[in-house]
Image 1 (cartoon, rainbow, N blue to C red):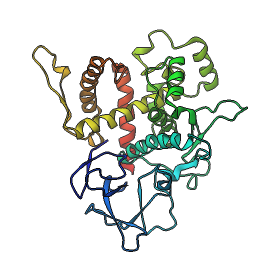
Image 2: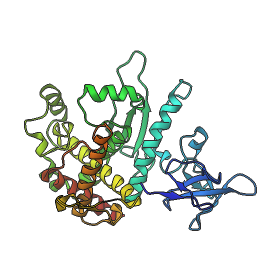
Image 3: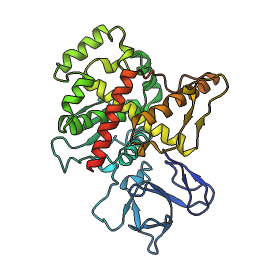
Image 4: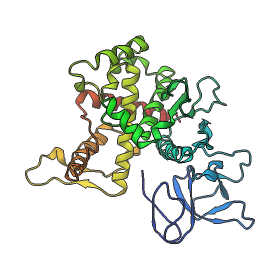
Length: 358
């Protein structure tokens, strides 16, 4: 995530800010410009002018979900039939806001979802709505457990991504993380994993890389339910850490792809933040060259995955050490072996091939 600054007073701004804390200007995100812009109201008070001088699609109005405090993205006012921004138009079912606490849960979900869409847009990845593709278009359901029914399961099916609302409760999510023996479980991680299944369908199954993908991740034609049952009964195979980024990735090639896809999004997004802050990991006397990271380029624009890996690995070593110094868990508790880096490199190639076609 990049840093932003107020066009009125140069105050540093962050992605979820809705008003500048120094000058008080209202803020809105313009996805076509990747700009968090200070705003001034139009004369009639029904729209907003952006102070970003590149904003030639203005005036703008806020996404309809801005009324709930869950979205700060803008839409050109010249599109009166469009109520929702590019991120919120994919919502199919939102939480029941009459239930106490659900607005706060939805707010947390939307923060994660908007960060997902920031990355998808920065990568120029294709995405189709349910209107464009009624059978496999992308859509989101945010569901609460029924009082007497089975618990809602977070997952993906034919473009529909379901997020269990209880995942927005920190205590519940941490409890599930511990019960399932996971190193990492976040709302943003769920979004990045489940969208990986959507892009497997779109870019691999329906693209030109199925054979190549099977050679790297395994044959996806194996029975999924049997593989899942075997995983939960027996656990991961011995020595799995050499080839898989997580235990869950071992259960089926689809899950291996989705887990690896999620980690690719973790990496490019976090490296952009490090790049925005001008972070480097300098080589110190007695330390090996491999501990040095010069993050000179925005990772969204880097053609070679090796360059990304050379920046990412030393950064994780440094930040993991900083966390330990504070008595916290590792920032990135995963080991990227050569086999896993090969899988990440395939994801990088797939993303850039799709970007070139776009």
